[in-house]
Amino acid sequence: MHRVKEAGCLGLAARTGSGADRVRSRVFSFGVATIVASALMAMSFGCSSGNTVPPPEAVVSVETVTVKAQSIADVVSAEGVLYPVHQASISPKITAPVRRFYVQRGDKVHRGELLAVLENKDLAAAAMSAQGGYDQAQATYASTTSSALPEEIQTANLNLVNTKATLAAQQKLYDSENKLYQQGAIARKQLDATKVALTAAQSAYETAEKHLQNLQAAGMSQQKKAAQGQLETAHGQYLGAAAQLGYTEIRSPIDGVVANRAVYPGDIAPAGTPLLIVIDTSKVVVQLHIPQLQSELLRMGQKATIRVPGIDKDVPAKVTVLSPALDPNSTTEEVWVEADNPKGELKPGTTAQVSITAKTVANALVIPAAAILAEANGPTSVMVVKSDGRAYSQNVKTGIQQGNLIQIVNGLQPGEQVIVSGQYGLPDKTKVKVTPVSANADTKTGA
Image (cartoon, rainbow, N blue to C red):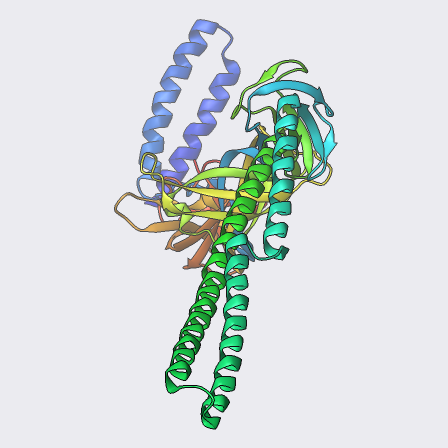
């Protein structure tokens, strides 16, 4: 049966070919061709109905990368402004005209260096007067503590001397009369009168001695205290006047560079208003505001890099300040990153891009992030090309991401081929044609 159909088909094809060779007219050829085409379609249907040939399997072209192990870091990136590590806004404590400036903008200065002087003739005179008062108080104090006893004490001392002499005389008189009384030369009455006088002299001497002691104990102490108080008052007045005079000398509190000079010589410098600004640019800091979830990854001393316009290379830095509280308005944490700036290439006020290495994983399995297929409520997966040339869906668990690379915690093995372009909507077990690409290539989409 099959042979008869095959022979019929061959015969028809032969007759068709020989008839087409004899046709010369275009109209006739068109008609014959139409009839032959219809016949061929009918015969072809009959010929193929008994021996079906399946169509070839579709092959999809995809791009793949090889899963490999390498170091990957979790990097927190943010933008901030450069500030000097130290800055001093120098304001005078008194209001006075500027007599002279010793520096200009851009001059390097050292700690304690004289930058400007204010008019101070009145303050210099006041300081001199206070110095004189202090010197006088010192002299008075020295005189009080080293001079003889005051007049009252001298009087009491003289009284003590007199009463002592009187007591001695009365004692001598009593002793003499007592001998005479023993000899019967005088009466008892006279001896008793002398004894009364001796007792009175003894009492007067004791009173004078006690009075002198009391004066010495109280009087000298009070005078010394008074002299000491006067000395301290004069000293304080002198120090105050000297301080006021010293305020007219404007000195730098830090090493650095003069960044600004607000007025000119002769202008009034108001108290509390910045007269000069000195900045230390040997180090700079970038003040960042990091969202809470990212700030929880940061620690003091973590390495960072700073990139600013005009400098082709990244500048190494480190985290030096982590705010203990969040900003209630933005719910961000203020973080300072500090970098050395010995050549002054980093200019304060410049906007900088900062990358902080929060975590580093060595020998992590990584693939381009474009290979990841993630559904809102479904698993995270990738398409893996097996040795049979077909693509298979494989669930994975991801870790940290750095740039266009993402860590695969589990689900893949080193050396496997993962599709990074052409995997979206690709059915499982589809036969693919692979074009390998570099794992570090900038693969933007998997479509």
